[in-house]
Amino acid sequence: MTANYQLIIITGVSGTGKTTLGNSLSEKLSLPFYDADLFHPKENVAKMSNGIPLTDKDRQPWLEALASKLEESKKSGGCILACSSLKESYRKILAGGNDIKWIHLKGDRDLIWDRMKARKNHYMKAEMLDSQFATWEEPNYGKKLSIDQTPKEILEEALNYLKK
Image 1 (tube, rainbow, N blue to C red):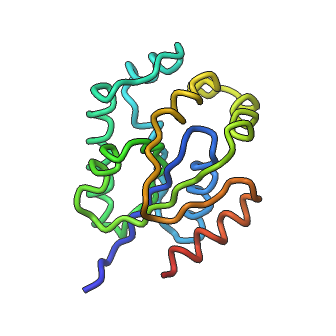
Image 2: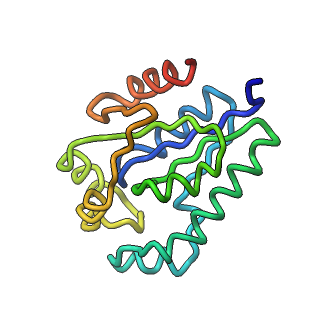
């Protein structure tokens, strides 16, 4: 029996275009989109705003809240979540035994750095990018998409993957 919901998680370091892709997929698939950044408690946002990387302990309640949101969304057909999910342990918490379609955005550090420097009013500082790359544990599942193409090309590649 196939699930009557679709759960999609878009991962990658900050600045890879998770929100851009998530919003586009949301429009195409008529699923709600959630940006994991908006679920951080104010203490986490304060740390990141001051250039202090979060610890696993800081992330635990945030990841649990996101996993609950995914579970809850199954009742209404699913959702799309953009979340860096840099470590496998984070992805396991988010998956919670659900059938997740994973999309992992990858790109050159310098390209991502330039994108982050161009951002306005975002608490995640470009200077924290190296710590994200150092933390990232590349998964061996899901669809890996290169960000050195246009948002439209990335969207088409993602949609083709999700049809399977």
